[in-house]
Length: 441
Image (tube, helix red, strand yellow):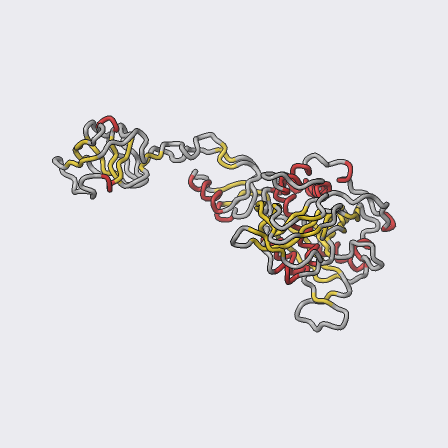
């Protein structure tokens, strides 16, 4: 990502597209023996997404699938393509309350036709005889021989009459196909109704139900062990001693993960004791698919996560991104591990930039963030060698109002935002009115 994205191509597509082709090189996890890591150039956002994708690809295994009834499948991702077992609609039906006719029976200027018995929804009607019109309700099967429907309000009289053999109605002309829903006009038998990896929201589940499919094979929900670290952090509700802060990361990430369909196991706050952290990860990590920690991944003197991972194949590195540059990635005793930075905005941005889109690409869930193009209400500056993510709100006029500055501790600004603003690497400044890609939160 070395230049602004062209209009119509989303950053999310770029990250996931490049992740499919960058499995080697900087996607390789190097052991962090003795807690030392050779200095190297910052990894790109796309390169780190590729590394996360490589780490989590085993989550696609067949033993992590299950068959669920539709009412339990909301928010899951499809394992395989679903082909339509029937057509939708399964038969030609009326789009309106009106009269089913043979279009050839009604010339320009209209015609008077005899009225057949009515056709309610759910009935299997008799064939339409020449010179006759059948009262038909919305959704009812079109009689054989009929090829158009005239709405009731265009008829004379413009109301349905009790059926008698002498009843007639005057109707205007209608072209073939008028107000008719053709069989298979939505989807035809054998066509792909939903592709593998589709996120199952209400509309997708409704389609499966309309096709008569009662259950579906989906990926199991990902289970995450979430650990907050730091001697300076205390749980909300406790007394706050001098020099301490309340833990917002645990609540912030747990909520983001649960909202995304992940199952979260909280392990409380780990102190700055490497051996105690290792014991916690061993005791609490069983049965989880992924370990995520916050804090302790930078180059300070008390980076407990780095110290706890000294003998593990874990890489600690810097991604060319602001906020969220320091990252950890690898495995802890064979279990996938991601180490996010300790500042709250940084850890949420890390989740949104790496874990959420990678899982969406692999498992079809969570749903991808909606990328849109919007214009800045105010100018901004950005470090040219980094991909900057700013917080903002979409205004009624379609512009973006930035919330707070670029600092990664501004929780109040984050809470007042409904989108993330992306400033790609290579861009040092943008003027008011400049177009940017934003992800709706």
